[in-house]
Length: 206
Image 1 (cartoon, rainbow, N blue to C red):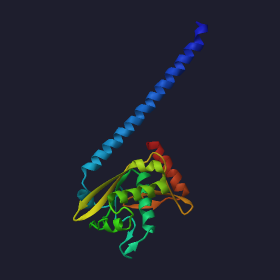
Image 2 (spheres, rainbow, N blue to C red; image 1 turned 90 degrees about the horizontal axis):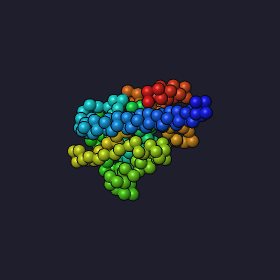
Image 3 (cartoon, helix red, strand yellow; image 1 turned 60 degrees about the horizontal axis):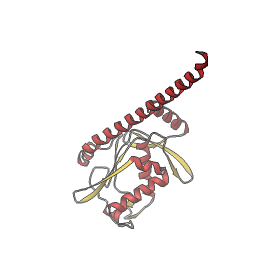
């Protein structure tokens, strides 16, 4: 009946909105389950296996967070290198960052880094790492990082498991916003056009 049309339309609209909301919720749950599955597979790979495999688009080695082994002193300029690497993984497909491992795969350990910290242990290292990420990339990004420590050959190694980010992640440094992405076994800064194109491609995949 004509007088029922407004009510019928209202119910149809409500039903459509509920259906859309359920669909979006299901998609979000599916993405989360996929991420959990990916993290499970990564945790199944030991640090020894990652080192043996070598650096790639999903694995990077760093000898330290802030200790300069050449100059034999604390060098905070190295901290931003770690942050850029993390941003590159976040803007790509995620990955594993091993801190305490040299480029050739030898174990350096984190003891020199620990000595520069107020809290000279694993907790102090993780606190500093997360603070650096929060300051340069944003507090929400910290939830996409998972730090796992393991003693290998007498030295600690920090394995940072990094999830891919659903939003573009920029490095805020020296008054600029930098966009980095993982390409092959290195991390590269993209210019404005490259960054826009890369973000558009990633959105179409998510």
